[in-house]
Image 1 (cartoon, rainbow, N blue to C red):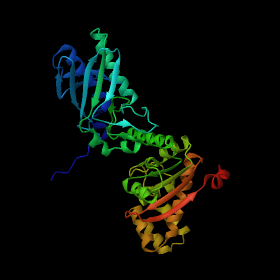
Image 2 (image 1 turned 90 degrees about the horizontal axis):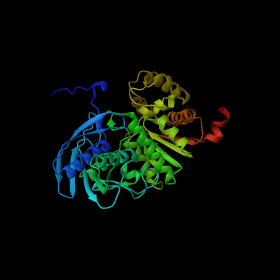
Image 3 (image 1 turned 120 degrees about the vertical axis):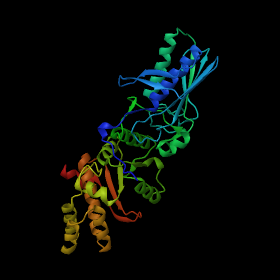
Length: 375
């Protein structure tokens, strides 16, 4: 079996957003309809200024309607929509103007807080502008005065949406047509940050002032199971972006944040590291040993902590020797470092859980009482 060779990020291939693909499909469909011939290759200008050529997978047309299908190429980004069919169907109308809507597999917005109004298809502002702009460009080219109805569809969109946050955000029935730049940067941190910011905005708009920020699926499941009374919008997967998510919460005037995670990443937060990717900063075993000393852990165990390979190993050691104070002190440090990062303004609660979702430690630090005097 061949060993998988990981690409250098600098050598990774860019892809194109659902918005860019929908725009290209719209142009191909319109040209096919107006020229009454199959147009399978079109070029469009992306918001970043680059002109890109797209190949259509399929084009059909009649005297009154045309459809063009393009296969979304996400480049080397592991996006859920990579390989999806994006379809644009156009029909000329007697009414003036360009009318854009979503069809099968394009979600519909049901909750406020998103950049698209409730009831509308989840086609974000920039893609909407791109699609309508290319339609206007074609209309001017052919000197047309009548209108057009454009429907964007994604045949497998409803299934693809199950792999996204759309349901939590109140986007029902399919995926969103997205993209502010037109290109997809592989493993883009900006894309993940944008989804966190959007999720926080939706939660706040829907009346949530206590949010649960989790580092992954297991910690999110724990938070949901242990707080069934909380609205689903309040549970947000922040991944490695602890500092960014906390700052977004403060900016949106959230009153309380509960952080839920495991030893590996949360031991870093306790040290004051707010971007907890495995490559962002090493675990500081001297720090963990000091927390253990303050918790009354005997010297022989301190030596084992200093010789450990992972933070999880330290957690297991503390569990086996029944030192729960260690986890409480770690949670307290997480709260204080989080408040220090955002200069106060809300209450912080922290849970450290095990792989089996057992609570190892929990603490709450109220900003008004604990931090104000030290600012």
